Image (cartoon, rainbow, N blue to C red):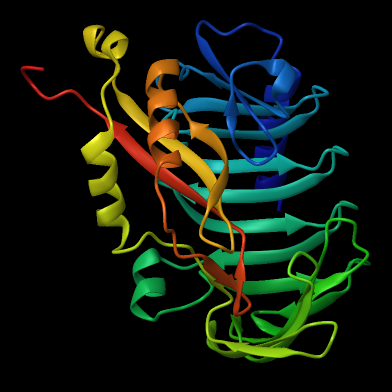
Amino acid sequence: MKKLLVVLYLLLVSFATFSQKPIRQSVFYFTKTGIEVQGKDSADLIRVISEPDSGSKLYKVNEFYKNGHGKLIGFSHTIFPLTFEGTCITFYPNGKRANYSFYNKGVLDSAYEYYPNGRIHILKQYLSIKKVQADSLDYNFKIESVYDTSGKKIAEKGNGYFVDYDNQLKKVIEEGPIEHGLKTGQWKGEDSTANITFIETYHLNKLVSGTATSPGGDKISYEKRVMPPHYPGGIDQFYAFIGRIITYPKYERDRNIQGRVVVSFIVRKDGTTCDYGLKHGVSPGINSEVIKVVQLSRGWIPGLKFGKPADLELDIPVNFQLSSGQ
């Protein structure tokens, strides 16, 4: 615990000393949903990435709410995407600590999560991607300890009960038993966005079955809580469609500007798309070309949430790279 507090103190100092201008830094602006925007006026989040200290290869990452309060402090191997290393701390808008995580080579290893009132909620140990894929698990973590909002421990050493609340601590969104750190048995909860309550049965973090009930009493059974939208024929067909019509803007081609754009959009219940934005951009010309072409895509197969068609967000990366001789 002493070591944990010392590390936390050292990280917090970086907020206090941020006014000392580093040699070189990059500033990015994002909305609440993670869409990158061009200026501070339309941003909800400001990300400042500073060059590594002498003897280090890790970039310093500081994020701030629009009011200037700190949101995140950590270290990353890369600027985009962020690949955190070591300790990373996030904060609620009220200044209370939200999450204390530890990364190993960009992979999340463990995390303490906190309630908005500042009390500890849960300690999670994350599983390897290979294990999740091999065992077809629906959750990629084990739950080590759980506390209620008063600080009382309700699960210890992976055994007990889990209760999760909304951000205002006013409503339980899901709850159920855990054994050896894994979801097991019958869980229940509600989702206000889908306007349903649900009952799910788990075995070792794998969803066996689920039933969602609407306010009118209608029931729908499902085997996956969320099934993402997909393009007819799969993602390869989508990229083939893009490849047939996309063009490299002349300005960027002449100046050898390359990179990866991540475009975000909503696939509606009827398969149409809307709300286009950028999770990461390269240049005005390339960004605009990617969004224009993605907007031309048609016939998306809508995703499912709790067994019902739902409006769901997709993030699609598109690489712009000049081959030799171009």
